[in-house]
Image 1: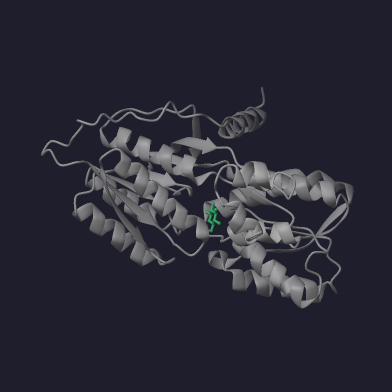
Image 2: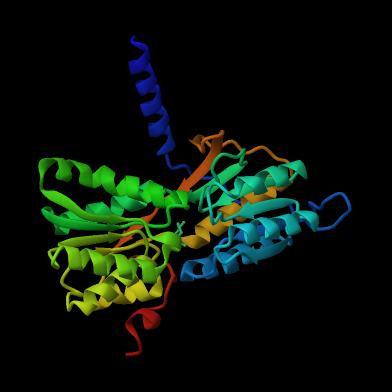
Length: 350
Ligand code: BGC
């Protein structure tokens, strides 16, 4: 076989392997009497990027509860989107003697430095929700972010099979933003090629800031004379900025908008009709999986999932959980039944 064809085939096979979604073996690998040598309970460090979006407060609370439910300790820091601060906070936790580091990187590339430092101190590192690039990270646990983008585009294509689309992307420093965009275009590309869909505006949003998304959407409306048929925003925070810009032009509720995270504000917008869909990612599953695996790895046990993802440096053992598309039709069965938000929070008091 021609070498180039063989390489392409190998690439296709490895990409296909990346898309597998695996279930982690049943949770508790930890036994109550498992203590570190000096008989101190294991301590897990959680270096978060931001607490700005509603979801991260849930991640913090649920991860802490999951670790503590096993009788272990957790140290938590959040860096407010500051790379230098995130590195300093992780270093501080390493010096304080954590047994394993879990990180939500602000910047996929810059945080490689933390991985080197942790490994130098004999501490394993798990990437939580977002991948760290170009570092020998020990494990990556997230949702299938490419699938999130596909779910958004599938829903929008059902409603708007032809027309002008706007894409408001996430932060380019976050690997998830790239995966989401890939997923969106996996679905839209055939319609673009047929000439049914035109992407008339496509922008990243630094730090996922709603204000920046608002500015981009305002610009998209102005330069296209409001001739927009659908908007895909990378998350609910940016979708909020989009809906605000649409409202300025009295267009809120008339143009379908997609987001992700199932934030309360977004779920309410779905009820009132100004946002079309969101993607629900059960954070409890993520935090519990990571907590169980953190304990497993901190005790020097092996974990070899069938999925691995290349991060530019190595094949990172990975666990990808399933995201779920949410519209007004299944909101009750998915979001409320799962107690992600209460009926009262979503619909208000009767
Ligand atoms: C997460 C999203 C979140 C975004 C902004 C992404 O990496 O996957 O759930 O909305 O970051 O914090």
